[in-house]
Each structure stands twice: as structure tokens, then as C-alpha cells.
Length: 422
Ligand code: SF4
Image 1 (cartoon, rainbow, N blue to C red):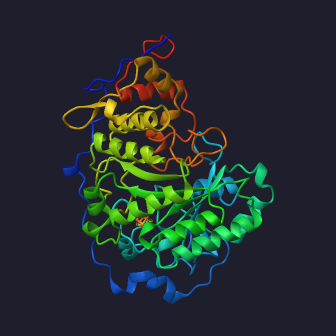
Image 2 (cartoon, protein in one colour):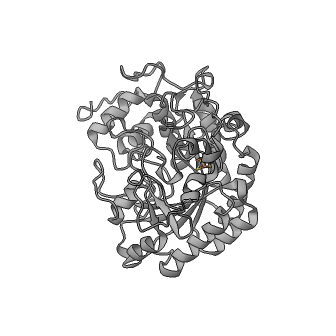
């Protein structure tokens, strides 16, 4: 028998945390600098007009060749290693369970999101194919080569899911369809289900319907910002970026109608200035609509307009991560949680024994995302070290062990009374 004390602030966050949450006023992005004309829209790459030749490893070439979807896609480093396209090993992970196919163009993403390594302002200093994204490099690979490898034996593939990740580009809608059709021609989506990480800015409801009809199982919308004000300053006019909160919600609601319960979701980055109460109200709203939220811990991406800002303190992150799991999978409700005057969780609104069981189980602290083949609350999309370094893991891409759980408890400020964990 063990139990934990319900979290009461001030939490014992440990000595490493100078602040215990990222406040709105402190999380202002830099203004983007103007890009010289000769670097705009992939001009440097397009004027050189080098033909692509096989796999392109970022930073290995002085000039990114002229690669575009649907012939080319980019893969996370973890996916490239799992496919055997890149050498290397991941800290404490044998493989990734999600194959993310990121659309790619020499012009890159035409949006300018402040936290993102792919943002448009980076064309001043880096060709698109050489940009880091969620902390890692994304090699560009011919789509046919990826499909050839997986199609050899889809049922035995380490991948539990494939996800087409759109960016903001005039070709993005059509090329998402082309990639999905190329994939499903050779690989049964029953063997490896497909998710779409959408770009609502360029989409209409008919696009959502079409992707469902072509075999996509889950449709997600990267809201990323938890409130309209944060959205505006990190993805909208605040950084000369085209996105609109209302348009993202229009497509999210279309996804609910078209894909149905538990087949749609929203990405939310925690720690960009929202309060914990605001983040969890959004999580509850998405659950009440029938969907799931997939959380990311804010990390100052190198080269982004927020790379000077602090990563989300671990105690803030753990509280939101735990509360989100309780809402998404354990029947908790935000109205039954209690928050302090700064919007921090002080009571999760569930019995202490239940909270203890869920913390002890550890699944709440794994990466959240679309499900794989193990269980509904274990994401295929494990994104190894996409939101933290291995030395200070935010989203665990594997099952946390007893030592990890000790650390998590310290970060949460909850005490284990059980001798084997204390
Ligand atoms: S739309 Fe997506 S890929 Fe493009 S800058 Fe924004 S977050 Fe990055």
C-alpha cells in the first residue's frame, strides 16, 4: 500500500527550478528581422538548381538541393534511424513507433511561428532542408524509398502509425493527398494506421473529408497556443505569420464531425505564457468535444524567435501533464480541480489513492499523441527528445522506471510514503 499527498503549493520542485511557471509577460517572442531579397522564398537553392540525389542529410551539403514533396519528404532523425537510413542510437530507446513524413519544399514553410525551427524568418540564415525542428535534424528522403522499406512487411514494422505533417505552403493540401495515396497504394492502413497533422490555414472542410475518404484514421490540429492571445503573438500578426485562431477551430470542429470521437485531436505547447488553469480548460474543452489533446513542453528551439526564453519549468509541466492525463483518460474534470491565484494546480480533484495509482503507473508522463498498438493511452508518436534533452526529460518516450518516477515525484512536489519508492 502506498499513497501520495495531493499536491499543495508551494510544491517541492527541487533546487533546479528558479521559477515554477512561465508567465505571459515573460514569454514575449523577438520580432523577426527582415530577410535579404536574395534569400527569400528559397531563392538561393532554386537559383543553384542542384538536382537531388538520394537521401539528403542536413548540414552535410553546402547547398540544399532542390527537393520537393511529394517526391521527397523529411523524416525525424529517430524515424530515419529506425528505418536504417541514418546510423546512430537513441538514449534509452530502441526505435520510434511513429513515422512522421514532413512535407518539404525549397521555399519552406511560409508561416513564421515564433517557437518553430522551420519558421520563414530563418531563410535569412539557413536553407530549409538544413533547419532543425523540435530539437533534431530532419533528413530529406525520396518518398518511394521510405515506402519500399516499410512495404516489405508492414505487419512486422516497428512503426505503429504513420503521420503526414503538413506545413504552410500553397502545395501542401494537394501533396498531402499525393503522399497519402502513394502510401495506401502499397501499405494497408489497417496494418499501419495513418494520422494527418494538418495545416488549417490552407484547408477547407472538403479537404478534411477527402483525407478521411482516402484512409486517414486520425486528424490533428496543431493549435500549439493555449489561448487566443498567445496564438496571436506567436503564430499570427505578432510575428507576421498568417494563422488565425478562428480558422484553426473551424478545421478542428470539422475534424470532429468528419473523423468522429477519439479520431481527432489538438496539439498544445505548455509553457508559452498560459496559466495552468487556461491550458487545462482547453484540454477539457477538447475532451468534451470527443477528442484528445497532445501536449508538448515548450523548449527554446535554436534559431527560433523564442530561443532566448526559458524552457517550461518541470514542476509546471508535470502538473499539467498529470492533470491532462486525468482529464483525458481517468474521468477527472477541470471544474473539480482547484487552482491558486496564479492559475497553478493545487488539487487534482481525484481521490488520493487514484492519484497515487496513476503517478505510480507512469503512463501519464510519457509522450502524448495518437495511439499506437499497445494501448489507447500510450502514444505511437513518442518523439524521442523532441521537447527536452535526454538529461532532463519532459515527455518520456518510453515507460519511466522507478528512478524516473522518483524524479517525477520531486518535480511534482508529491511525496511517496511507500518505502520502495521513497
Ligand atoms: S506552420 Fe508549423 S511548420 Fe510552419 S512555422 Fe508554424 S509551427 Fe512551424
